[in-house]
Image 1 (spheres, one colour):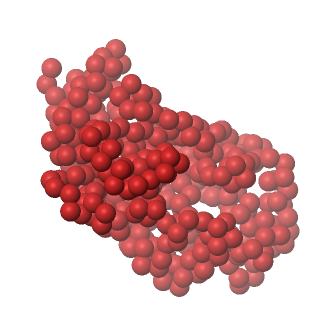
Image 2 (cartoon, rainbow, N blue to C red):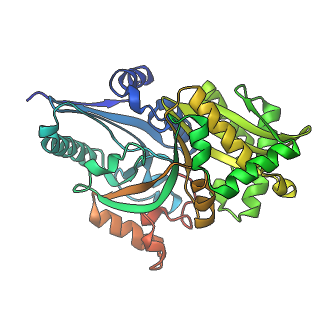
Image 3 (cartoon, helix red, strand yellow):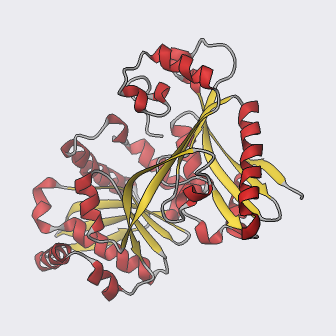
Length: 359
């Protein structure tokens, strides 16, 4: 059986593969633009593996990170890298042509990929799978696959009245109160510098309120670069009370998906239910524009409970882990002098105490 195993770095070819083979699964997290942004911001490089045989086509985008760029490990001999999918929901895309041969083809893909990983001196692999396409299920025997807390998903193929009927009663009540108070929502598909600054003021206040980790404190340069790279695949949903923006959501739109990326609301205006109103308008917009799913995200129990009140279902979120070089991994962990709790992080040698980063 003829097989193809290629490493893709050319963005034109990357996009062409997504458009021709995976047109129904073009979530933002699989495209080259977002990976390039993360690669630039976190001193990594982006690439994707393309595998094809008679039964299956696999496309796996990820970031390659140089472990020796962590100061603690800079003087170690030889090449040391690890790979990760970016913050969000990614992993390998799988298009099945002959289901009866699927298991053998996935095994063949992983065998070739793991040979490549050894050649490239990859120490570990970390995957954040996509809960909507449930791509974790193809790799449960090859990676340590772990189920985490779910994410809230809205089925945008439903008409608005059906979507509204799925909302919790208190969420419906909040929308009505927002509308009675005069809260309106505007979408900004051209994101100017003043709009970025407005968003960041609201977002950073929310991060302070939530006592968020430092890695979630984005700056103006990062958001501006994101806007430039993604273009119309990114927009702002702004809740306005009079002339004051009281809440703002930064939203991805790509393929059949809408996805919450970053959001915030002003504490002084919490009684106006601005988030309820934004989510409702986003779901109506998504349905009208022909999107299939709205990924509201997950989070802490209180955050998930809020988002679930606007969803049609909860989807399980999975991650995957693999250590390729156990002896090297143990050496790195020992050098980091981690306590038992810190060693639960993966990969442990990248614990935020050693090297804070988002990806």
